[in-house]
Amino acid sequence: NAGVMQNPRHLVRRRGQEARLRCSPMKGHSHVYWYRQLPEEGLKFMVYLQKENIIDESGMPKERFSAEFPKEGPSILRIQQVVRGDSAAYFCASSPVTRTGGFGTEAFFGQGTRLTVV
Amino acid sequence: DQQVKQNSPSLSVQEGRISILNCDYTNSMFDYFLWYKKYPAEGPTFLISISSIKDKNEDGRFTVFLNKSAKHLSLHIVPSQPGDSAVYFCAAGSAGSSNTGKLIFGQGTTLQVKP
Image (cartoon, rainbow over all chains, first blue to last red; front, side, top):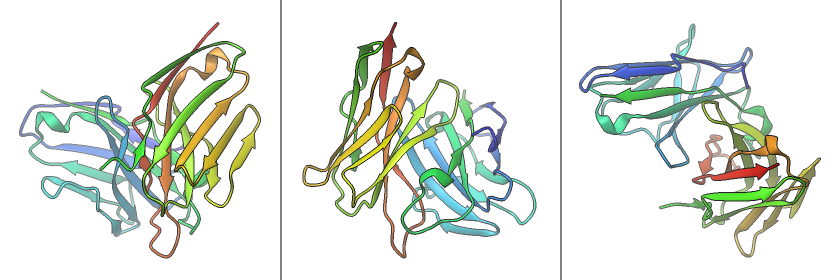
């Protein structure tokens, strides 16, 4: 679990600013997932990326949110012009491969970034 | 549309007794189910999983039961320990050629095990 590194752990932004959340997957993992947890709710899938490719972004809000996973460096989740409703915990998970039959034990979550919009 | 539901927000049990956490789902296309444990200020940690072709999977003190006809699964922890106190999330996923590995999570159940 500690192998997936997210930073910062806590991020405070004023309304209208940009938030950039970083995720370095575990060594050898080339698949990254972003989830968002709103207060008192479960985790909601946002986006699934492989190196230089967005595979599934069906959970991403249509505006202001974007994600990338470049060939070199961490995956970035960017939120432009943040609003109070963006305040949440954002979790990244990584996996070495995606296999039919499951996500299961191959996926590991980071400790999350807690975004607070004031 | 909440496809995975954990209807009990919290559960309190005595140390040494059994903890039973429940989860219901609506999508019959789910192929596998997982339970995650989460401590405050940490990410979820995988606990145990079960394929839809099975009705039981056991790992030490943890057993997951799946009732496909009822679209219901449960996690049993026996015996419960104070260190088990955490939020438990049920999650489900679909296999097949379109599988992207994304999971659908329930809202979570907070388990408190009292010494």
